[in-house]
Image (cartoon, rainbow, N blue to C red; front, top):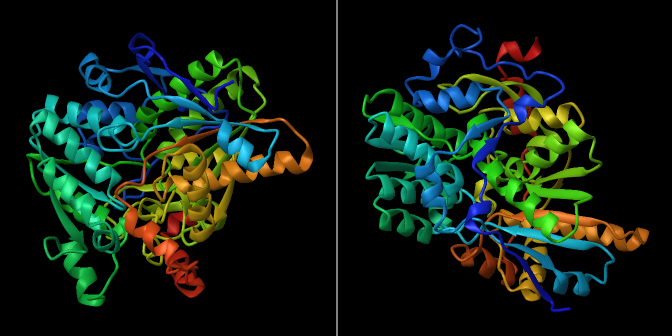
Length: 455
């Protein structure tokens, strides 16, 4: 059999609906709370930030929500995305395990993020909004929203975490090529940014700070809404097109995963690949392990507290119950900029809390080592974020080798690393450090959790 095994779906096989895991959860999630009153929020509280159709999706408990045909028509440029059997990697590892990966790097922006950027821009445009404000870490989300803005003729302002802004100049160039404006965060453009700079002039920034800046812009302008690339329920739901396609492709392969692996920062690509399988497990009792992999320098699931917290540093967002390191926590400047968020998606946090998934953390050098091993076997160089999923999948395959088990492993290769070559140059030059978070800073950030966290 050929070493290259690719499973392709026809356009007609692209999902027509998003899957909403809220319909199948065995225990209800804790509601979001208003940051001022501490009471559960209603749609009117979210209206300054999001269009009503997205608010309806955020609170929906329907199992399936239809994907608009205009959105599916744009998706057809690159979807359905391919699923590969990593036979050459299996040989390199000498493992009896079978490894499959869903490859989202074929999108115009090079990652899974357009799966939600396109519908978010669509719903905002339909409501008459002309401008979107957002944040980005590594730049994958900012690039994707810039792409969506170009398609729908909308202005896009992107506040990019300063350390990543410096590390990844080509991401800024890509956003500008799509017509967006990219600003290093913290900036002097917002009250939130100015407050941080006044206290910490040399701040590396964080996703929490960048969110505060984008939310402030959206909340103070009638023509502008806020768009988020991860964390929220509707964002994770939009990504389930990935897992639904993968299920059909695994069926084509005559296989079903024993283990599903995804990297986690805010939770969107993990939810996208894992939630359809968790739905199968909850409805039909399918026996499957689901593993979330995160960076040891920002270990939200493995080290954070499951508590109510703000989604941003400036405390402008609703309080949500999630695994959090504290809204003021700023991780060290490691290279996986998209995995630097202080919190985790409430849905991902909830399914870990009730025992449906497990989580692991890795330092960045072992993840880059795995990414290079993958590239030399499979030919695709992963984004630094995706390297965490590669590391997790390889370790599962090595476990199978040690235990003599022939399990099936599926992971989401959520993007390519073509804009991240400086990180690889630093890796090959021995310049990458395995950075650990500051225990004292983490303790202070967790000590500052809002009082509702103790309830």
